[in-house]
Length: 152
Image 1 (tube, helix red, strand yellow):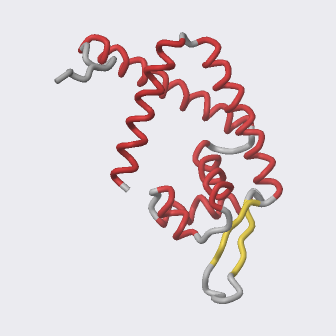
Image 2 (spheres, one colour):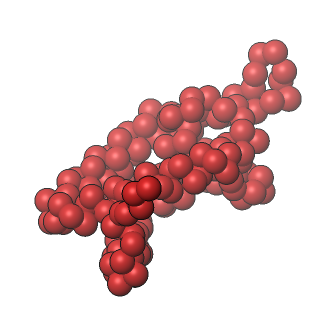
Image 3 (cartoon, one colour):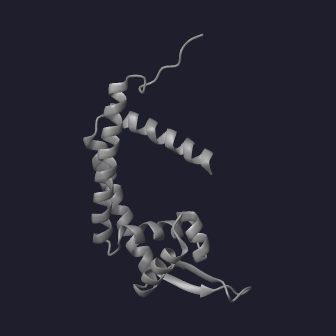
């Protein structure tokens, strides 16, 4: 029987890879915060707007579930987004007690700017990073996706 081998079999290579991934994630978060600020958002608000953009109209409770954020925190974030006109709040016709939130035009514009800046950053990383590291990073992300899917 043939033993399965991969790029993680070498302990030194594995340590270096995880160190590089950690450095990349730290830098990605730092640049993402800067890009969010350039877009008139915080990183948390940009993330919440992305969830609303991807999922469509939703309640704060649904947003809390999708993001894994505590309901009181979601309430604060939603209020901040409403004050800056990034979201629209409305009541559902079938149940006026249910508040729904959706992206406003202002929120869409800020999110598009943020996403554009993020895309430019990702493209610059791809150009500056060697293919071997990108391959290893891609392998790590595939594993992480499988693990998180299994956890759901």
